[in-house]
Amino acid sequence: MTNNTPTLQALEKFIHVVKELRSEHGCPWDKAQTHESLRMQLIEEAYEAADAMLNYKTKGEIDNLREELGDILLQVVLHSVIAEEEQIFTLEDVVKEITEKMIHRHPHVFAPETMIDGVKSWEELKAEEKGHKKETIPPLHGIPKALPALLRSAKVQKKAAVNYHHKMDSDFSISQVTLLASQLENVTTKVQKEKIMTSMLYHMTNIAWQENINLEECLMKNIDTIIEALEP
Image (cartoon, rainbow, N blue to C red; front, side, top):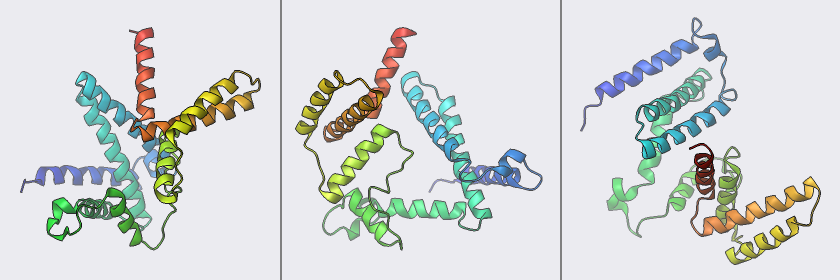
């Protein structure tokens, strides 16, 4: 087993720093933060980390990726420290839970001797975990509202198909996009245009997920292409 002492020491020092920032003699800004006040910052940091991953892949930029991952770690530790102050859970609880989750979701790796009927699907394993919890969240309500709209739309349709057998045929959606596009030419009010364009996007995400296309990423790449063409 690899000696992780330096890593553990670095993490312990970092946790100590965050706790000091939250202490009575710490930083006024850090002391004032709550889970709610940090919500948007966590989302922004996640996007910045995702952008750094793209830069690493396309430009080989290492420093930025390391820095952004550090910012994500800060968010995790800060939220855990706040939760510890509220006496609801600790960082140790967070680590234990994700460790147990990863072991449970990979029985073929950590407990192959228990495999009888083959490898269960990721969704089946997640359902088992939820079955052990006192409260269950309906599948569609469990999809984060903070997700980008195109991604959230695709997830809603996928879960609706699995859990409620509510699935639109992709050919039907293609015909609807064509019909809606023709209707768009004849409407004049903003409200009508918004309604039609929203329906078009919903049907397009339905087509995309059934074709295993990430429409969010495709649009991002298209935007980058336009920017590069206008500002080479």
